[in-house]
Amino acid sequence: MGTFVDLLDKSASARALGDWAKLEQFSIEVLRFIYKEAKIDESSLKIVIRNYLSSIVGTGEFLTNLGSHDVATYQEGLRKLLQFLEKRPHHFTSIEPVLQSAQEIALLALDPISANRNKIAKHLREIARPDLAVTICNQILAKTRLNYYSRTVLCGAYCDLNQFDKAIEAAEVGLRYSPGQDKTFPLNALVRAHTLKFKSNGDFAEIEKALEYGHQSIDLKIDIYAANAFVAAAIASAKEDEIEFAKQILEKAEPELRKVDISALFQAAQAQQALAPEAQVVESFDESADDDYFMGFDSLIDLVVRDEGFVPKVLDVRKMIERFGRDGWFLQGLSNVPCPVCEKVALHSYRKHFQRYGKDMHYWALVCDVCQTATDSIDYDKTAFSFISGDLEESFPVANLCSECGG
Ligand SMILES: [Zn+2]
Ligand SMILES: [Zn+2]
Image (cartoon, rainbow, N blue to C red):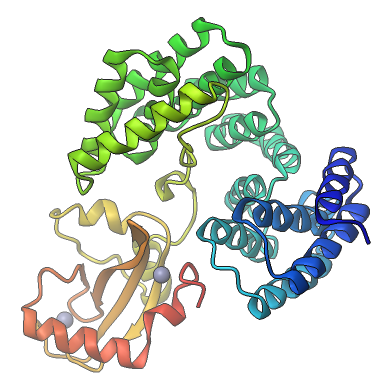
């Protein structure tokens, strides 16, 4: 057995050659090594885990060939890794999204409908297999040329592979096909691709383009994806006015961040940029992680129509119509507490996972079978609602039901 650094080097060349069997073998050796030594820094562990996961994906036959259904090898490898990490817990937060993506791939591979294949491609980037993400996106695009979501994922995957021209081309076509507000996704992807291309070749025309696309995206919608992509471009450009503007945008996108925190964040990033102009100092959030962008079939309305047989009435307040129309809802259960309106035991609770500043939370939708209405928790009297939510949590703990909480 070689030294630790040796093994990491060998892993890197096995990865470069696409020798997945060797990569698996070296990764296991590294894992055994840290099992005994128990000392590894966060970024090295992330590399080792990505290497191992990449190796058990292998040729990816189970993902690219819909007829294969052979997800068992991957699942078994993943199970072993999770078991290992349980015995030797390394609490590094940056490992979590990698493991989560690895688990999502196992689940999504069981149901390879088109929307799921888009998600698989996105998760493949997280476990460092952008090559397979490219294959899958191109498979989808061969059937549905206009799938602008796939083109946005494709842009990110090509960026991972340092093929910036292909990345830019993919997102430009995606931009043409995206309707209205959805244009922010390819726009943010273009901001990132041009920023990275600028960092690779130093051509100022690239960073100009990045900033231009960034302004277009922000004009359409300010959110954390647009803000992060723009912040990265502004810092890379080193232009004072763009940096000032980026601070204001971040303030709007993250109203909970304090001004001093934002200043500190920029100061640190600018200092880091000065030291290493080619490095990516602001980690861009995935430009297409927004749920709205996934085409799926589990909006609240879909679920109620399918399971309860009616279209619930929803008041046009508090963005309920928009929220209930999005994907990711799941049934929590039937409340033992009667509906405050019709006084029948007929209230079904549906929930949808979301995250704010690292904390897992769940939206509410209460659907009464008798009243045939759907509403959030705000409409209820505070005491009545605390009975309903308390009863539901006792019978159906939401963290156990929610797939995103890993229950
Ligand atoms: Zn009712
Ligand atoms: Zn959850």
